[in-house]
Amino acid sequence: MAEPLMRPKRKNPISRTRLPTLPPAARSYAALGLTAAAARGAFELQVCRDCSAVQYPPREVCRNCLSQRLVWRAQDGYGELTTETVLHTAQELFFRERLPWRVGMVRLDVGVNVIAYVHDRVGVSPCRVRIEAALDRAGQAVLVANPEHGRHALSDDPKLREMTCDPRTRKVLVSDGKSEVGQAVTRALVAAGADVIWVGEAEPWKKIPGFEALREVPQVKIVPLDVTDGRSVRELAGEIGAKVDILVNTADCHRTFGIAARRGIETAQLEMDVNYFGLLRLAQELAPVMKARAADGPTGAIAWVNVLSIFALANYPPHGTYSASKAAALSLSQALRAELKPAGVRVINMFPGPIDDEWDQLVLPPKLALAALAAALVEALKGSVEDVYPGDVAQDWRARYLDNPKVLERELSGGERSV
Ligand SMILES: [Zn+2]
Image 1: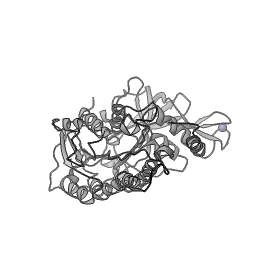
Image 2: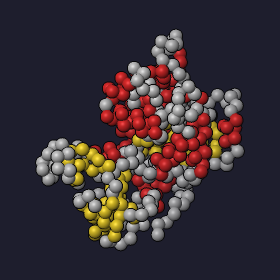
Image 3: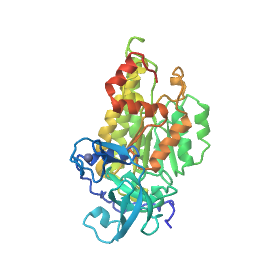
C-alpha cells in the first residue's frame, strides 16, 4: 500500500538546494508522437494504414509491410503484465537517486509488447493491466501500467508522484483573484487540498462580492498584484517568490472587439498589457526562482499554468484583438516551457472555449461553466499533461484545427461557423 500524500517537512533553510536530475529525454523523431499524445492525456500508438498492424516502439516504417503510411491512433491500453523486475542499479543519475524502481513488460491485447513503469497498486505478474501514457519530469512520454479495473492516480504511487503536479499540500499563487475564473480556480484549489493560496488583487478599490468572500477562507491570502505594473510584480516576487510551488496565471483582459468596430488601439493595448506582457512580467520575476527550486521535491516548485483561450489557436474575428493577445501569450508560454524544461517545472496551457462570464455574454451556448474550467485545471495538475482543452467547444476547435487550420480560419472568417 502506498503512503498517502502528506504535508512535507519544512526545508532546512541552510541546506543547499540540489540541482535537478531528469530522466533521459532523448527520443527519436518518430517517438515524439507518443509524447505529443501524452501531452494531452492520450495513449496513442502507430497504426499502419496499409496492413492495420499496430506497432511499438515507434518507427519510420511499418514493421510488417514496410509501408510509410503510419498514423497515430488512440489505444485502450489493455493487456497483460507478463513479467516484471525491480531495478536496484542504474546508470542514469535520475534513477540512481530513486531506486528501487519497478518496471515490467506488458503484452497489449493489440499484439505488441511494451516496457512500462508498474504502479504500486498493480498485483504481482502475471496479471491484467491497463497502460496509460504520462509525461515524466523531462517532459517526455513514458508508459505506466495501472490495474485493469479502477484507475489509480499517479500520485498514489510515491515513485510516480513526481510526474504529477498535485496541488495537495502545495503553495500556489493565483495571479488574479478578481475575475470570475480566478475565484473559481481558487476555490477548486482549496478543495484540492492546497496548503496556501496567494491570490493576487489588482485595483483594491473595486469591491467584488465573490472576491471579498475569499478573504474568509483560511488557506487564502490576498496579496497585491497588478500584472500590468512591473514594480508590483517585482515586489510580490521578492516577498513570496521563493515559496511558490505552483503559479496559476488567471490574469485576463477580454473585450469584445474586432478591428473596425472601435477607433484607436487603447483597448487592444490593454489586452496585450495583461494577457501578453502580464505573462512576460510574471515569467521574468518568478520563473528563475521557480527554476532554482525545482529539485526540492515535496517542497519544490513544480508547475506553471496559463489560462489561455481556444482563440489562441485560430482568430475569432468578433474577438479579434483578444484572440491576437492570446496567440501572443501562447507563443510566449512555449518559450517559457522550453526555459523551465531543464529544471523539470511543467508548463500547462489551458485552452477553454467561450466561458460563462460577462465578456462572452453575447456568444451563443454551449459555454464552459466556471466550475468545469476550474475542475479541469485541478485535474490537469493531478495528472500528467501539458495541454488541456476543457469542454466540447474547445475539443471541437482543436479537432478542426488539427485537421486543417486553413479550413477553420475560413469557417470563422466567413461566418460559416460560430463558436
Ligand atoms: Zn503495414
